[in-house]
Length: 318
Image (tube, rainbow, N blue to C red; front, side, top):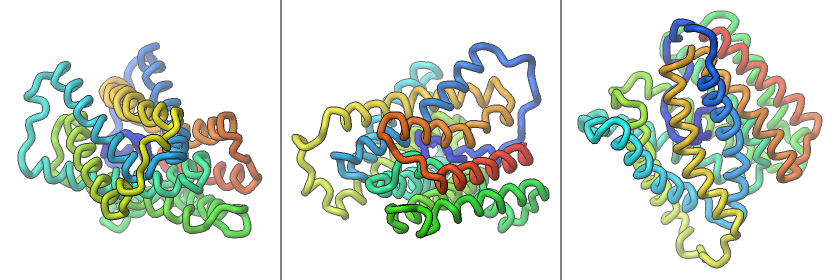
């Protein structure tokens, strides 16, 4: 929920709605275009990968494996590129990162993984796309009055969510699964909201290391409470589930997030934030192409309305 705004299922706590835009620089370079393409495609594909993982793996156990594997890999990458000092944080910063990681990865991503056992990946991505809408509402509660265009985008996006979750329109999908994804998006928004107000590690990649560690431990504890390890059979896991899990660890949590962190330093935030409404489109197309997920008119209509609302919010907030 890469990453993952419908932020990155990878585990970054940063939200395009809590940062000031960078000044527009020179013409977009090929490197910026390539990094943006990675964020678009890889983070958009994580919904498909999660759907494949939970075909034969327990949801919280697989999420724990993903983040507990990705965290030390990212720590090694940070140490290699910036030195071990980049991972040094105060106790307060560590606590803030751990709290944000629990909200993003156990609450937000955890509910998404749990729901994708019954909710198609494309539908899940469209529902997660609502994260910027909830962040705006949280900012409103916190005393920041957004522009009228932002509120109009929120209203439009919520209307799209109503279409997507309406019992008579969502077909055979269980309302509980759809609402679980929406609840996860709200929790993710809370984590993003708090990340802009807590004392977080200055290095965003170091922050994500501790977020993923906390998220992995939290997901593992939930898996134990749900007795997932007791009913887990290693031999029952399919090859494609293993491949999808590896894809999430390496590409979803490392490659795409590194590209995202690099973009935040090299490109205008208004351009980087476009992943918020491109990712769900990529997810819907991949779900249709790879898993033959149906594209019904409520999905197309509701999804278009949600993405349009997010587009208005990102454009107004930039």
